[in-house]
Amino acid sequence: MKTRTTMKRNKALKTVLALSLMATVMTSCSSDDDTPEVVNEEEIITTINITLTSANGNATFQSQDLDGDGPNAPVITADNLAANTTYTASIELLNETETPAEDITEEVAEESDEHQFFFGLTGSLAEVTYADTDGNGNPIGIEFQLTTGEAGTGTITITLRHEPKKPNDGTTADAGGETDIAQTFSVIVE
Image (cartoon, rainbow, N blue to C red; front, side, top):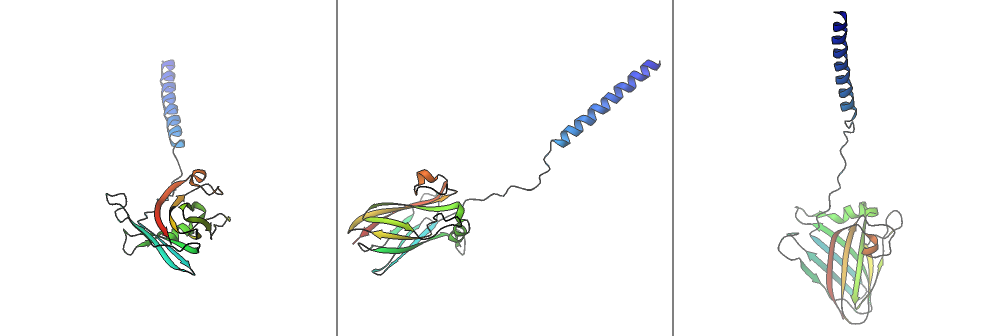
């Protein structure tokens, strides 16, 4: 009789130990990190304004796409530029789905180490030079200089990349990252 009682106790003890071990394993595998991961949502950019200033006069380029990825194409305007001229230029980015419009340029400037504008030129547009840098001395492109060549036509493609490799060779292919906005402006140089 004593053996049966001892066996029952041993069986009960094994069951309690097994349940305790399972409870310990289950609670030790849970994450105690209750801090949520910060999500940096992509910016909504509906409008890009470029203001160009030179001794020969001022010009503006604008692309406005109020329905974003909707069916309507962006409305694009570009003033004519003077030949053989260097323009001091600045970019303004807006989210006009909000009232008042949100200035996304401020966010890009604050996160300058995570953003860079890239410029692709054709035709009578000769050169772009960055006029601003992030805290590590890498170009941003909110401020830049655009130099025109002889009279004719050309295009400037402006691309904003989020989290590009820095430093890079000045091309989107080398920089990687995600495109926040890309727009091509057709320009007449006279």
